[in-house]
Length: 442
Image (tube, rainbow, N blue to C red):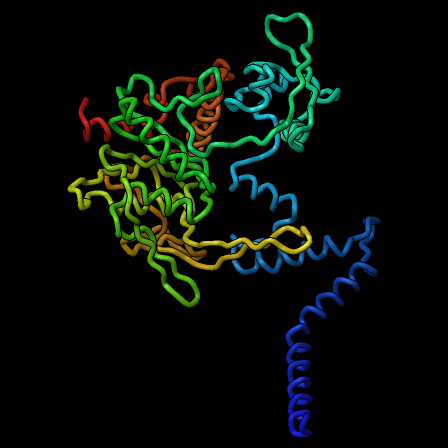
């Protein structure tokens, strides 16, 4: 090698090494601090040592939380739980549980149709008194769920008390992969399947989306044609208490309704502005839609509600016009998009904000820390369709909706509102029915 080339190679190597050292200086400094604290930290009265793993998790979370309220470090357990939620799958038995309001017994309130517990013969109303020989007395629902979750193929032994039986019943359930739905109905039937038509409504269907997982849009794509065949003439899409989920799922759901090439959402990242537009395909536009929102309607659910609200009244190429009203109270105001990155060696994941979004009409969705009530943020109900509830009434309604989602009636005398027809006890549903009936007379 010529001497000049050798000298150049040496100089470049020195420059690269210097850059590496400078770039990694903060990492070395952080490692130094972690070692110092792990080896020397002591707080009077606290004899438990602090581990480097704990320190890393706290420092990572603190760093990300300092960016904005939505960025965070997810420990392995939290990452697994979030992944299960988005995947809409978990390994368990497929039974929903609650503590009886009077006896505090662990009771089966509903079964996922076709899941392991349903096949094994567990029934709604059964009281689970022991799991794998351990009494459930004094246990929380969370404690019981942890015991019932596990790996597919494992057997969990249940001891059950059932009305009409004098002796405890032993039921063995083989854990399996359970698919969960995010598009649920008004109430469950005894077999665990959802009933989507509201009682005494003459063709008005109700779908509540609990979150936006990977399969949410596909669920709606299957449900709507099924409901139309059953005589649906109007749809209530309940997005209240919906914290959001994946951006793609929200976009895919909008694409089921919005005319081809119409703007669904604008995504603003550090370097680009990306417009996401509707693609070609069959559209659900032959019936009016009432979207219910509240102060906990956030993120992906705000994308859907703002998109469908902006699309209302626009004619599609086939001449059809979408008729949508947003009903309820102002949404949460989360116009930020997070991405999630799994960490090596099973150390969990980090999620942080990578973009923001605005509605198709260009309205700001994000509520900034200094935002005032008079500022533009969130999604607001259509004029004349505002339904404001007090905190007390919201709590009552939330409890009522939880009870209504059970196969059995766990309401107790004096519950307010009592277990009954949504048109009578849910002001938003009542207003939605009025709109749908006026848009599509019986």
